[in-house]
Amino acid sequence: MESVRTVVLGKPVFLLTGAKRRKSKENAQAAFDVEAPEKLLETARRNPDAVAFGFVAGSWVAAA
Image 1 (tube, one colour):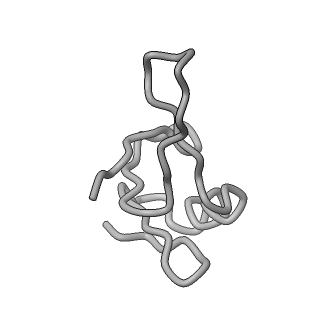
Image 2 (cartoon, one colour; image 1 turned 90 degrees about the vertical axis):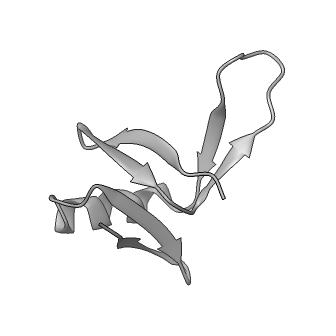
């Protein structure tokens, strides 16, 4: 399992699940598709101290 490090609401966080690598030959850097990004933003607002999130059963949860 591969986790993704990204920035959500100006803070670096890890996405433990819920992000899939997008296949792109044009860009050398990896691009990812995030499941339900609007729910991720909502969860990040409710948990401002969280540094990791996971996508479980159709919703994002703060993991750490």
